Every structure is written in C-alpha cells, then in structure tokens.
Length: 243
Image (cartoon, rainbow, N blue to C red; front, side, top):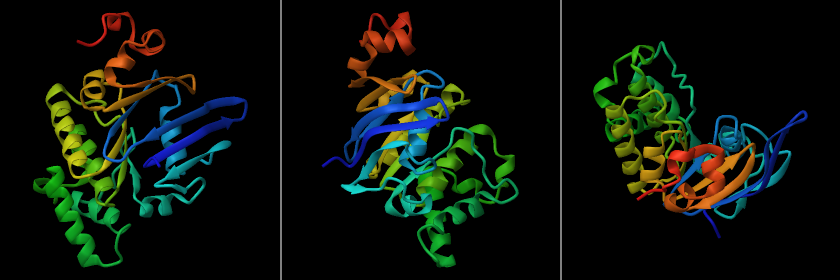
C-alpha cells in the first residue's frame, strides 16, 4: 500500500482536459518531484489531491483510504496540507497570528494554537519575525511564512507549489535546507518546482507531465535523460543528462 496513490485522475473544464488519466504513487518519507511546462496540469493535480477540485474521474487514496471528494478542511485534518504558488498571507495580521490561524486546524485551544505556532516558527526560522506584519515581508520570507503556516497544521504529507519561485540564489539555498529539514522530520513531500537545481537535487523520484498527460517517471537521472521530457520541458541542454 502506497502512502498516497492517484488512480487515473482526470479533470475537465468544459472542453479542456487539464489532467488526463494521470496515475502516480508516493511512498512515505520521500520527496516526490512533479515537473512539466507551464499549463501542464501540475497545480490542477495538487488541487485534485487536496480536494480544491473534484476529479471528473479517477480516485485519490491516502494511507489506503479513498479521500476523493472529501472536503478540503477534512483533508487537512487527515494530514495533507499544501502551499500555493501565489502566496496570500493575512496581510494586516502579524506573522505570529497568521501561523496561529493555521494551527487552529489542529486544536480548539488558543493556548495550544499559540504553542504550536511558536514551535513551528522556530522550526522554520521565522521566530525572529513573529511580530512583523505579514504584508510587509519580502518575497523570501512570505514564501517561508507560507510553508510555516502549512507546517502548523502538522501535516504528514506536504504539497509544495513552486516554493522557490521569485527567490534569489541565497534564498533558494535556504529553501532547499528547509525542505530537507521538513523531510527529516518525517513529512512526505510532493513538490512542484521549475528550478531544476532544486528539483533534481532534492527529489527521490520525479513524475513529468505535459498537456495534462504523464510522460515519464523515475529517478532524477532517469527523468532528466528521458527524450520525451527533454523535448517537452528540459530542452536540448539536458541532452548530455546529469552527471
């Protein structure tokens, strides 16, 4: 039994098939990369797993349980949380209050939510910014806040949607360290990322899609050398493959 399994997921929007018959298995404790060109269906796949969208057909199983169509807040309580490519914190609230709000998904106690928030901010490296207004954070810290809020829900499976988008090289390195730290804590991760250095460095396995269809899956080495992936996404500079 896989930790997460998507079986023949399809999502149609009118006459457009955003995801077509995609199947994948994610094992507990791994970092599973999801790559493909813009518009390939990666975020839609995240939306199907987290029930932001209901599949036109297909099913999603988490720890052997069919979770297809379960309401999003219940998906979170089961242990699946996701971040968003475009981060939208509660701008007029402090970093601390943003994380407390997320922690309430795990507890009805204000004191416990506060403790969870403080622990999570320390773990994610944002404790020193706890009193800052979220709307005033630079992009790197807003991205980190997005991850911190997700971690405050105590996920077993974390879906990361373009965590490094807009970050400079130093911020990207810090993002890599945080992702690996989260994995080392026992959280399974599925990551969508266009930064090939990140995705190829940290992923145990990678699944590539194009035009809503699966085109390859395997280790970073295998996927980077796959002719279909090179043609659809990576480009000719990857013809020599990874060394």
